[in-house]
Image 1: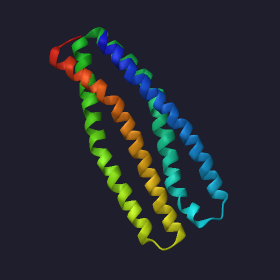
Image 2 (image 1 turned 135 degrees about the vertical axis):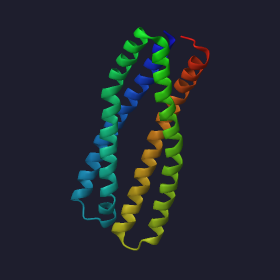
Image 3 (image 1 turned 45 degrees about the vertical axis):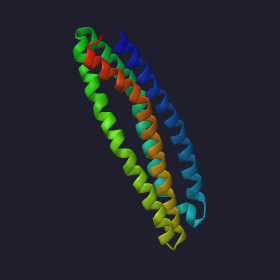
Image 4 (image 1 turned 60 degrees about the vertical axis):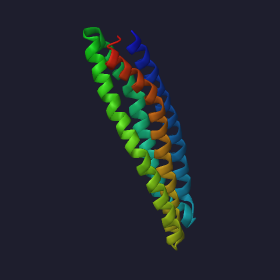
Length: 168
């Protein structure tokens, strides 16, 4: 039963983060509408990255919110059939997610630095706003992936121990 307890804790954390992302997505959408109505060129430049942030927040936040309960139900049904199979499936999924988060965080950091560098290269307000918006977009992606990875690590460690010890 320990697997189901740990999976429930991890899934509820993802659901909570999804709800927070949805709330921030709505706030960013309101900000995008306000910027759309403004006449400030620097702000207009941030409109594309903010729109991408809205899509990312609403899309992935909605995905986390509405699919993790189904994932939990799926793990429970597989666990009832074969605990070892459930552990192995969850371990493989967690391993892939762990590797993806580990690889993406440096990518976001490099993109932040490059976007910040573009801010100093560009001359027009619109392009400066675009580069600042990209800094914010990549920083947001870094925060999201870092939080998801932070919550995945203990779950991944538990699954590793289960796989090694066959402790069901």
